[in-house]
Image (cartoon, rainbow, N blue to C red):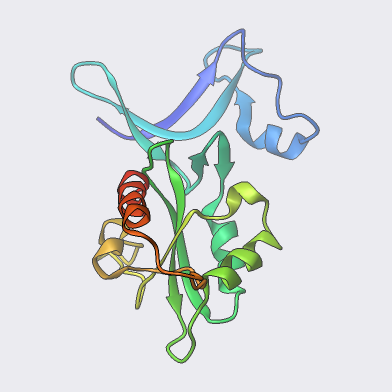
Length: 189
């Protein structure tokens, strides 16, 4: 019933990270139960339930996994804060039909208006493509829990979508409007 980090060991355990001895030393430790063997610190938390099954609790850190990539949201948040008009940011995931999507919640400066294109272009100039969020929302302030941590559940209560800054050259037809509504529902945008 007590949460703890998951360690992985056994004969099929990797030798370490390729060309990264510092990360290898941090994540691969000597097995205290089996001399000469090593364990891998996964960074995942779990606990044993009373029935003996393991309950996964999530990451020990804030690392996210999106489309096979492990992403540190603090890197994206830092890049977002460097964009003119963004005073604070929080990056998390949001469920989508193809798996989780990166979602950014932005606190914008009260006197300025942040443009969608400026945000995405700013991020693409400093981050790899897989780290550029799919969805952007603006919030007046990042909500916090009573402990002062970011309240991920409370983000949607005051969030508004950061709209794209393009103007259509013509109004959509009724068929196009219907298709747009269907796709928006399916893609949860």
